[in-house]
Amino acid sequence: MNVVVLAAGEGKRMHSNVPKVLQHLGGRPLLRWVLDATNQLEKSGKTVVVVGHGAEQVKEAFKDEDVCYAHQKEQKGTAHAVIQALEHLKPDESVLVLYGDVPLVNPETLKSLIEEAGEDVGVLTVDLENPEGYGRILREDGKVVGIVEDKDASDDQKKIKEINTGIMVLPSAKLKDWLSEVECNNSQHEYYLTDLISMAVRDNVPVKSVKASDRWEAEGVNDRIQQNALERALQVKLAEDLLRQGVRLADKNRIDIRGKLECGKDVFIDVGCVFEGNVTLGNNVSVGPYSILKDSSIGNGTRIDAFCHIVEAKVGQDAIIGPYARLRPQAELSDNVHIGNFVEVKKSTIGKASKVNHLTYIGDCTMGSGVNIGAGTITCNYDGANKHQTVIGDDCFIGSGTQLVAPVTVGKGATVGAGTTVTKKVPDGTLMIRRAKDLVIPAWKRPVKQK
Ligand code: UD1
Ligand code: CA
Image (cartoon, rainbow, N blue to C red; front, side, top):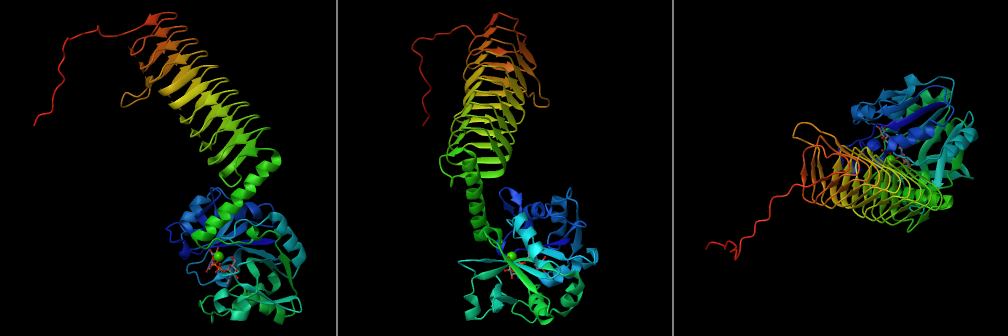
């Protein structure tokens, strides 16, 4: 089986500078979805991707993908696009054609279409409540006899609800001849691949069809409205997958998964959460409303309160994060850690049961266990040119409003008084405090505004 994916179109109706097949669905380009589906098929050679509009951008986005490209300089239609791919095809094998803007097709559906088609023609169709914009399937005595494009259809044909998904199996023996016969005398002046169906009927090549069971498998992305409809359908499907696995969601319509979310048992996710990349939630994790987690893992029993932003971070078990906490890349939190509101942690490890509860920045820091960081503490890690490390030993108590000017070390069990600017090592078990003497000026008059 040869596989050809048509991806040369501009996608005018998207009104975007980004080529259509690079537009996103579930956080990934449309073409990514199609290639993931075709990669699950038995192919004889590489998938051929026909590129044209934004070809360089498309190739760059898929530079690690093992495909070959055919160039279609001008986008003269889907038949013209397939002609560009011909030289890359194995001559004695059928050709499966897919459209780069029909992303949610199921590999199992493709397999049944391929099986049904055999050496003949196969078309994947679906019944749509609103078939507007799609090519309609014409049948006589139940057999497919042609496809008419929406723009060329008569009023009666427009009433047909069975549409062409664009996914077809075509026999290689006839393909070249048929393609060379296609003309562009239609309303769009394009060379339609769909014209091959009536040619097959004329040449007595059986046209088989398979109906997709799920309409979303067949829906294309041509404008933002369709993109949004597909996105919502996909998200509900992903949410339902989670529900089936036993995850409790506050609302299956208010969660977005743009990547892979793995959950343990008895996980709860509140409304408005976004998961990107690879996120793992352990058993009994709860995620509060409107939190965003990207490429992170959260240990068993940890509670993430509302409005947290967690990116490339690792959180241990039974921790409490947020509300309003920000964990940035390489934040590594051990078990039982508490990170409170308006606390930012970057490239730091925080030991077991340490607490950083209010208004604090911890960056480039190695913190031991059992540490308590007072409100408004800042690791001053940046001197304007370089980043420096702060080391805080086990069981330290850092008073509120402390600045730790890195590189600096606070020894085990040390205490730092509130408001101290620490610039030198604090030895183990000591109290360091640096404050100006109190100055009390009686009957102080505040400045008044000059007229
Ligand atoms: C096409 C089908 C229509 C079907 C619908 C399903 C034709 C003539 N029509 O219509 O029957 O119901 O898809 O979604 O095939 N492309 C190229 N080069 C071109 C033109 C298009 O590579 O010259 C690519 C596009 O990038 C796109 C795909 O082919 O991925 C389909 O093209 P598009 O213009 O979107 O066709 P539709 O009008 O949606
Ligand atoms: Ca389309």
